[in-house]
Length: 321
Image (cartoon, rainbow, N blue to C red):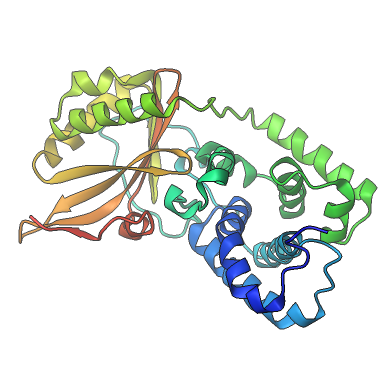
């Protein structure tokens, strides 16, 4: 029997803290929301604490907790709409001067800072499974299909373990998995292979320098021809350098001297925290830019206009001038 399976009740808080980053990542894959994932993990802790005296160690503590977390996610998601990125709402705009507006009525996908992924020994696996494109695609799956697929493909659970968790038969699990994989195939999901960290870092440095200098040619040098540009909570989005570059050039020119980008990581991808200068001269957190590398350039950028995302990434809310 594993050490996890016989962990004494007295060490429960420490055991939970050790497993917490993985649980947050799992719940984030299910919900598409960092804030919802945190709420579910807190509810998982409360439910597990109440039931701890009846834990019989027939499975590991880790499996038991993931079972509780999965079912808590399912309950929470049964009455919620799927979360989306702008590209999930319709076709891109072909006009770089298009009016960009906010829509708070849309259940938007949220980012997940790498700082929350925990133990470096497991972070690599977790980064692979929280890429923005993958999380957005998973949102198209019905909740139980999503749960079955994640338990199988990410956590490597057996069909029997999944069946016990979902309260269904093993053949039903196999059906859920088959339908989930078919639906993802229909989505024509493309998640680029991870680039070397050194390349990601170099590209990010070049992008930041180009944006802060309002250098359109330098921006063009690090993005693909079919580059996508999205921002949450704005339904309007753009694709292709002929549209994205003029839009970025104007934004960079407007922001010159007013905006600073600070490198970080989010969703297993290079990212930058955006800070905007205020009247006092200090820089206030503005949002989080998550970039996707495909080959040797960026293929997509998603800006989350939410200062809380910067703070969640472990960065300050204010940079003193």
